[in-house]
Image 1 (cartoon, one colour):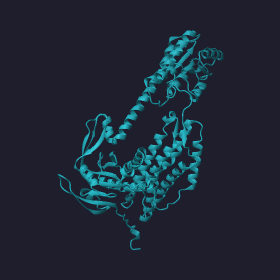
Image 2 (cartoon, rainbow, N blue to C red):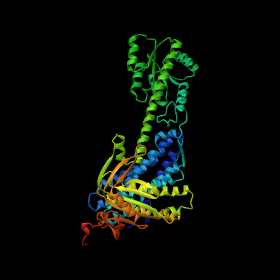
Image 3 (spheres, one colour):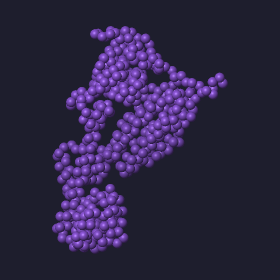
Image 4 (cartoon, rainbow, N blue to C red):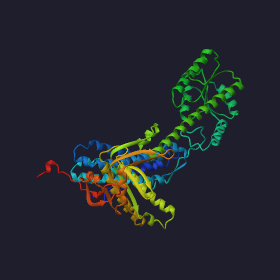
Amino acid sequence: MNSPDATGHAKASQKPANSTAQEAQTADADSSFGGHNPQDSLAGMRHSLRTPLNQILGYCELLMEELTTEAQKEFLPDLQKVHTAGGQLLSLINEALAPWRLESGALDMNALRLEMRTPLNLIIGYSELCQELVEESGSLELLPDLQKISAAARNLMALFESASFPSRLDVHKRGPAILPSSPPPLSSSVATEKEATASSSRKSDILLVDDNEMNRDMLSRRLERQGHRLVEAENGLEALQLLKSQPFDLILLDVIMPRMDGYQTLQAIIADPDLKHIPVIMLSALDEADNVIRCIEIGAEDYLTKPFNPVLLNVRLNAALEKKRLRDREHGMLELLQLEQRKTQQLIANLLPKTIAERLIQGETPIADVHPSATVLFANITGFISATRDHPPTGAVSLLNEIYAQFDWLAELHEVEKIKTVADCYMAAAGVPMLRKDHASAAAEMALEMQRVIKRLSANNGMPLHLRIGLCSGPVVGGVIGRKKLIYDLWGETVQAACLLEAQGQAGSIQISESTRVLLRDKYELLPGRTISWPGRMELSTSFLTGRKARKFRLPTGLVGA
């Protein structure tokens, strides 16, 4: 039986994906990537990448819901790995191609391509492994959906490996805007003042709505001399069409017009959430108080009677425009504050486990929990210091970062919590901060795949690297320490024992405690170990984890004795 390596590649040759689907996907990508409008280009890229990914997640969820027999449930762990990797891909795409990146200039699509490769290879490897297991076990009704997952993953792989996939995507929004929907980071108070000054001096786009051509001509010429840009509409219906097609800073709206009068037009503008923020100044020869009150009650910014006093018109118009700019600025600053809050929350979430970060954001302190049963993993990269002694610091850091990045993917894949790294030592734990019954199995799976990763990277870099791993199961205490620099850490004898098992282990081995052996003995291959002296405490009996036991499949009832 074939199994995926650390990146998810299946070791046996696999069935080719549907070439027609790949060609259609690539053709769709060609049309999406070639748009001239930055927003269209970004939206097209998101659509092209997310379509096959939605297929992967959708079919995976259907399969997990349809597993009913005990034999079929054997495939659930591998399907969960596919689903987790799909979620990782979706997060990468959503973050890299978010609409707010329209303000960030060209996007580095090669970086996205490289980040997508590991989870995508995991999806391909585990989905095709599931196909082999399904064929061996006789659960052939699951095969079509698994093939669709594999085909969709290969279509996605073919898409970003195609010649049409851009290395950079220019998404810089051209043309000035008073405030973007997602403002760029505020660098300093000086930048804020410059932005405010530029905003106040910017020319305004005004929509003039009046059925009288002479009135329009007279008012347009007056306002254009003051530097404003005017667009004219003869009635309310035409005005609403123009408002849907281009942005305006202000609307000058006549009250009495055929087809759709000023009151009806104003009501339509105020009722539209995309238009109600635009200030409207009503224009009319009617100067009765009832008309003015009615317009203000509907939502007009101001009311001017004809004929206009030029000075009063200019003052009222500039006041309305300044209010609009201030409201836009307030809205933009609120969005900026929300963006910064999201960044802060994301930073905390990256440093701490999700549930711990949520408790911290809600103000809970101090945070300290007792976990009655968990498995702690310590791993040390033996030979790293000597292997990189003659390399520049940047090369050593780059290699260590590559190793730890792979370990982090494995931790997320197996739902194991990374605790910290110290030089060439990596610490993780399963069963914290969220309890789980299979914590020992999760840590064992991660440990086995970490060994595969280090062997592959050692061969690729031509360095004699090995991994020494220690596992111990038992109670631990977890909590957040620090005031300015927060860290989630674990304490207790279980942690100390896991550290000792790693330190006293052998290069390339996974040494486990007796408590972990009891939890793994039914599903994993274990070899007798030795007794380790633990100063000040009892001696530790150990075993060595070497792999998973072969799965056993039951023949369908109808085939027994055939």
